[in-house]
Each structure stands twice: as structure tokens, then as C-alpha cells.
Image (cartoon, rainbow over all chains, first blue to last red; front, side, top):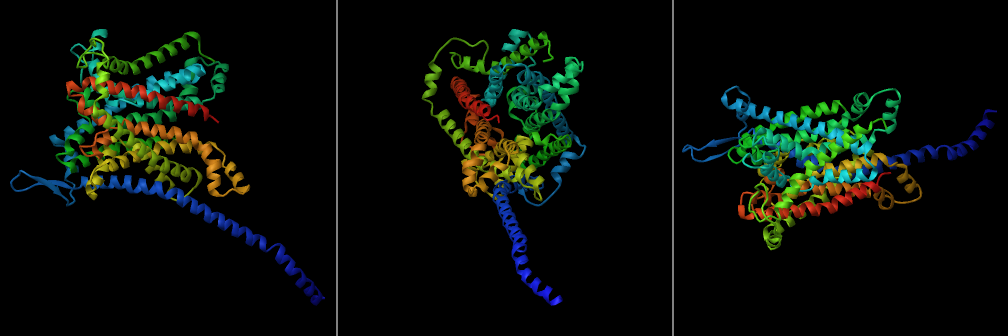
Length: 315
Length: 263
């Protein structure tokens, strides 16, 4: 019996072997080829951009940190200073200790952050109604026109617009003085206003993108449930566009934090972090590098907050 | 819709006011380009086409414009390649270190311009690379990558991957699928991203200031040099007006592309 069965089995085994065994083997081979190809593909796709960004950009940030740990040493005559490549925390001590010098840098930092917050707030307050009009009220034709009108100033003339504002703001006979009888003149307020003007398109586009994704039916549902316009705005629109607002704010905040040209044009004697870095760079590059760590820290904190709010995907 | 008529009118008036404020300085510069005065003073004096004629023969702005276009094209080309590769890698695969790479792509635009500028300059100085048009294009490409990356990855998230799988099932090789399926799906996103990247590079000055040697002037640098020279001001106004007018062409195309692309 056993023998017969055995013979039978022996006959069956090759059949089973042929019909079942090759399949899993083939499947795993295909899977392996696919997986290899997938990994190869990922390697091809990932290597060039990550090499560029990690080596060139992250590497540059590394070079910045290294430079910030160097110092400028004057020779015995005191006439020539040259770069000393021994690591020292001197620059950071100069920034952080509470002597008179460092309070200057603290003031500059606070002033820059204050401007960045103001610019972001102004842009957000102006962008929301404009973007809402474009996305939900304007006709299709008007929508396209307004989007073009808002994005076009991004193309040209950041500096030219700055100089045009300089003329309009001029306290001795600029257009603002002529028409409104008042101008903020040149200084912190002028810089902040002009920067809000310059970065407005970034905020407007971000908020528009968020509103465009917001289905009209949500607004209608809110109205049907008895909400007035303001209540709908506060309870439906605002929570939905919050990530877009944060994404836009990253641009307006960071662009202001790193700007120094507008201060040179309309800021009078006002200095932001960028002005100090620019001025120090030709005199004391290591100190300039150390001061550049301050806006990095501010932006990292800001980005971590934005990521917690889920806004980084919107960037 | 739930808005009352007065509310709509208020929104429309506000939008019109904002657009007026956006364009007032540009209109002012355009008016000045036709003025006989050699300053920015209000109100503009006289009318002339002489500034425009004069500007035609100026070599400075033409060279600077060429440099800006060249830098923009080079940076955009690099950004298109790196940005779309990064978009494929980061939206289509999950892998260890994905967050690090996505952060590295976004960081150059999220960190303030002065930081990017000084970081790149520190690297060039530490390694001992002489500043040139190449260092400038490299610097610009670095912050342009994220623009293309954003556009392409937004598109990739929307288009279904099964179109490419279908192409592969029908016997197309990877290159053929890329050429006949993937690229057409991405074309408008690539164009929109490329245009935006070019615009960003074209008007950039902070990184530019640190990434190029004194002899190489892009258009923003040329503007910066010439505002303080009274004799050059009429030409500055003409060139600025010309650039604003010329930029309507790519902006128009960008808008048409993104309209046609809504899937």
C-alpha cells in the first residue's frame, strides 16, 4: 500500500513540483527584480537632488558655522587683520553676553523680528479678503485677470519698486505728502510698509490656493445652518485656510528677516539683521557668520511650529 | 452664495484698491521713464521719448539683462532636473532619511536670503572657489529647486500612478513610459515651475550680491549701481518699465498653462 502510494506520490510530485513550485519561485524573482528596479529607480531619482542639496546647501550651512567659529586677529602693528582659523566661541560670546555691544545686536534682532511680524500680519489681513474675492466671488474671467495682476509684480523690479516708494514717501514733497498730507518718512515704519508691499503676492497666492481648495458647498452648508457671513468666515473659512496662511507667513516672515536692501533705500538709519551682516561681512566675516546663526535659529523655531500645524506640505 | 450685495461690493472695492496700490509705484516709474526730469521727484516733469531712445544705445543695461537671462536659464535648467527628480523620489517612495531630504530641498527658500547668501559665500571662500557666473548660477539653482519641486510634486500627488503601470503592462519600457505618459502629464507643471523659478532668479539680489564677483552685473545689481547716479536715472526708469512690460508675456503664458492644466 505504502509502496503504491509512494509510487503514486512519486508520479505526483513532479506534477506538483511543476505546477506549484515554479510559481512562488517566479513570483519572488519578479518581486525581487521589481524591488531591485524600484530601488535602482529611487537611487537614480534621489541621488542628484539630495547630493546637490546636502553637499552644496547643507554643506554651505556647515561652512557658515565653521566660519562663525573663526576669528579676525590683528597683527602686532594693529593695522592688518587676518583670519585666524583656530576655533573659538568668541563671536557668540560677543553676541550673547550682556555688555553694551550685545544689547545692540539684541535690539537689531528684536527690531527685525518686530518688522517681520508686522509685515506678516499686514499681508495676512490684506490677502484674506482679496483672495476670498478672487476665489469665491469674482467671475472666471476676472479671477484670471486678478491672479495675473497680483503675480506680475513678482517678476520685476524689487529694487525699482523700492526706489519708487522712496520717492513717494519722501517727506520733502513726495506724492504721499502731497495727496494725504502725511508720510511716515524714512525709517522703520517705511521699511516695514514697503516690505509688506513687496511680499504681499506671496501671501495672496498662498491664501488663494487654500481658498480655491475649499469647496463652495461648505460655505453653503454653513449658510443653510443659519450662520451669518462673519460666523461662516470665523468657523468655516479661517480654520480651513490656516495651513495656507502659515505657509504664506513663512515666506513673508523669512523674506523680511533676511532683507537689507529696503532699509538702505527707505529705512533711513534703521538697521535689520541683514544690514549688520552685510556691513560686518567685509570687516569681520566670522562675526557676520555668527550673527547669521540668529535668523537660522529663529526660522528653525518658526518652521518647527509650522510643521506642528501641518503647514509644511503647503510650502 | 451667502454674501450680501454690499459685502460683495466691499470686497470688490477692496481688491481694486489693493491692485491700485500694487501698481501705483510701477505706474509712477513708467511715467518717469517718459519724463524730462533727471530725478525721482514728484510730480514728474514734462514728456519725452528721448529716454527710451537713449536707453537703446546703452550697453550697460543690455549686458546686465543678458547676464540675468543667462543666470536665470542656467539656474532654471538645473532646478528643473533636480526639482523633478526630487519630486519623484519624495512623493513616490518611502525611505529612510526622506524627511531630511525634503527639509534640505525646502530650506533654501525657508531660511532668510541673507543666510543662504552668507552660507554659500562662506563655502566658496573656505574651499577657495573664485566667484564667477557659475557660482552665481549654482547659488540661484539652489533656491530654485524647491519651486520646481513644489509644482511637480503637487502634480504627482494628483495624477494616478496606474497610468504609468498601464503603460508598463502594455509593454512600454521605462524610457518610453517617461516620454509618452509621465512627461505629458507633468509638462504644464514643469513649465509653470520653470517660469516661476526663472522669475525668482531674475529679480534676486541678496544672494546675488554675495555670490558673484564685482565685475559681473545682473540687472538688479545694475539697478543698484545706477540709482545713485543722477545721469543714469532716466535709463533706470526706462529699463525698469521695459522689464515690467516684457514680464507680462511669460506671466500670461504661465496663467494659460495653469488654466489648461486643471485636471
